[in-house]
Length: 401
Ligand code: HEM
Image (tube, rainbow, N blue to C red; front, side, top):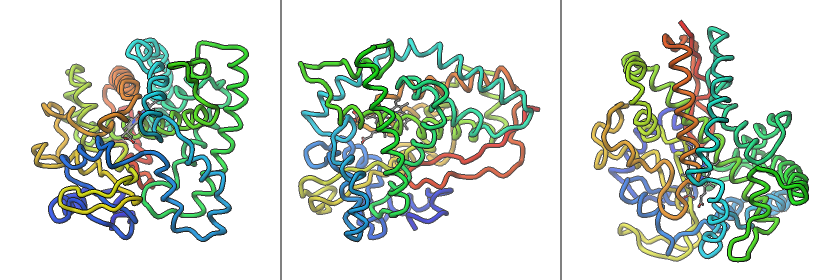
């Protein structure tokens, strides 16, 4: 049930059953524990005593045949490295301190003109077609172009980043791993690292105004990022910042156009845009599941959790918990506590790119309202992405009039 294609388009009835009947449950299909209530997901995301992000992916390869594990040696090696998201204190504190320099409110504000320009160019080119797939023309390219630029890659290489970021994450999503998609992930990761190594060498010699130069030169308490940590951090920035933001922008527009009254309201009152973004993040968490490794056996909510197993926090379910959100399955433009969603995580790993993602969504929506005030769903079938841990449309076909 929890891994079927019906789950991709509508996981919410299954989540509701879990919250009611088995809020902390072992899933043999996922090979993992699943936590589904808001209060438990919140505590679990913040639990640094019992849970760990370090080497959490190692458990994904446990079930494989020895020759498959051997063929994936590089991928396993990569996931054994620490980076900002794949580490616990004290390494996490050091690395987050470094990466955070690139995401201060001031740095994000300085990116704003670039976000605006890209959003305007992409929206105008799309609108000129009359009918277009919003995901392919705007929601997908905007975040990847921004991250590729942030990492210092020239524009002609953007298509590489697009492919790499989709491939790399493809094999994750439950505790059971498909060998073929893990192999694809390994191939793309190797290509990304080769590419980034050349770029890093260049920036060490000729620093520029980009994130790679900052990270390559950065020192925190005298400790630089090692080469492995730096490469792993580049991968995290690419993968953490791309599909999630594509999904946010795609979900937001799909939801606003699904009910013409919503589009009309947002058009008439653009002050509602920030809350519409939070409500979309709540209703359709772009990243539905987060996971950690249990590092210490402990009891949680009356359930005994053994060490060295995986635990998935169902963010998508927590965000629809009726104990916290009234009418949780409804999109309400003026919901007062929409911002309490857990879509950006909680605790020490709270998303560093939240401000950037919000500013991308704001820029796109603002430009769309101006350029295509009569925007409608065009009636062509819209699909869901076949990605287990994410929620976002594969296509949103729209018509300008
Ligand atoms: C709507 C878009 C986004 C969503 C839903 C999202 C979601 C998340 C979540 C749930 C976490 C916590 C992971 C954990 O606890 O293990 C996280 C962490 C992170 N995100 Fe995002 N993210 C988004 C956009 C971005 C962007 C645009 C960037 C950067 C370009 C980014 C960079 C990061 C980083 C570096 C971390 C790790 C922070 C740490 O471990 O201290 N994210 N994100």
